[in-house]
Amino acid sequence: MGRIAGRFVRVEPRRRVRQLMLGLLADLPRKNCWTIAEHVGDATPDGLQHLLGRAKWDADLVRDDLRNYVLEHLADDQAVLVVDETGDLKKGTCTLGVQRQYTGTAGRVENAQVAVYLTYTSRHGHAGIDRALYLPKSWTGDVDRREQAAVPEEVGFATKPQLAQQMIERVLNAGAPAAWAAGDEVYGDNTKLRAALEARGLGYVLAVSCTHRIPTAAGTQRADHLAKRIPRPAWQKVSAGQGAKGHRYYDWALVAITAGDPTGHQHLVIRRNRTTGELAYYRCYSARPVPLSTLVRVAGSRWTVEETFQSSKGLAGLDEHQVRRWDSWHRWGTLALLAHAFLAITAARERRDQAPADDGTSPDGLIPLTCNEIQRLFTALTVRSARDTAHRLRWSTWRRRHQARARRSHYRRQAALHL
Image (cartoon, rainbow, N blue to C red):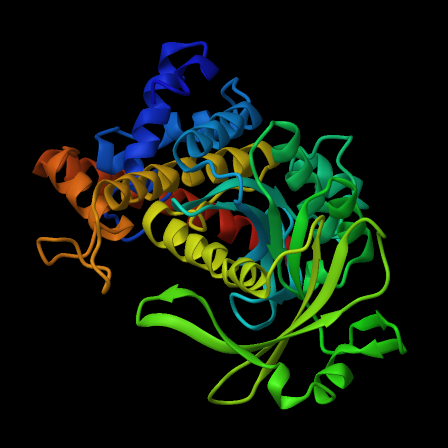
């Protein structure tokens, strides 16, 4: 908190942001302004709602502090910048960016809000360092909806690859050490994003679809057609990194690509599941020759963004915001990522201070502290919440009174529509 205190001129928002951060790290079943305010001892959620909606502070400056905090502990010149999007299911149509759209969270088209995130992944650990809300054209082209959600005038429509490019360039411009970028098919199939990464000299291992067109010496070929022509001796068994149950072994093959920057090296890497035979395809670029094992390591780092989503949502309430406006969404997301970064960096320092055995356990027979365990210990040993009976009863009364007002308002609106 001392790191970001200077971003808040007045003492009140400094106190409020500390309360919000403690609430995000608490073991609450739901995390929003109501539940956190009750947890930290406030009489109403007004103060926290003011912090997110109307108080004067810049979430982008706190995002820069978040990035610097992560780099201070996890910086690595071979780090991977992993991009991916995640969706939060929402009801109604007034919440910023919500429309019916595909989201991997549900695995289908749903009413959802989608955002792109950037995770910094190194040999020391990984944590989210940037976020960008995806605004569909149904929002960017609607003046009334933009005004209601306080979307800045300079914000226009941007695709998910464009948002990813903006975040990657922002972290590179800040001087962050990184050698690679990774992402799924949404980003690998995008020609402009790949060209931008090559122009910055940043290597990449980006997943592509099976229909992706690959330039070769024999002409342009589909990725899945090339896979069928690979001879059996060309497949190599390589680990994509350690998982919860040991090394993640796959069969891998490498195909040279004869296009692009003549000063760089491009390949198609194909991954084959050793049990099911399922194939996955990766478009790769590096400024200098690298072995297949390096490309496999980068491809395997993509799981870190999924783990970051799961951990930051489950432990820090990243997806539990109940905000509708532009500033509020960016403020909540930034602080949730910062809360998760605290857990991730504490876990990374724990691992660094121990010399694990071959099976991943420490000399005392325990696995290193995980983010989940750190949160439990932090909440139990450090945080003292307001739990007296009078406080609980006051909040029960406040909630029921507020809900009664909301119900009367809904009934009056419904009656007016049917006149």
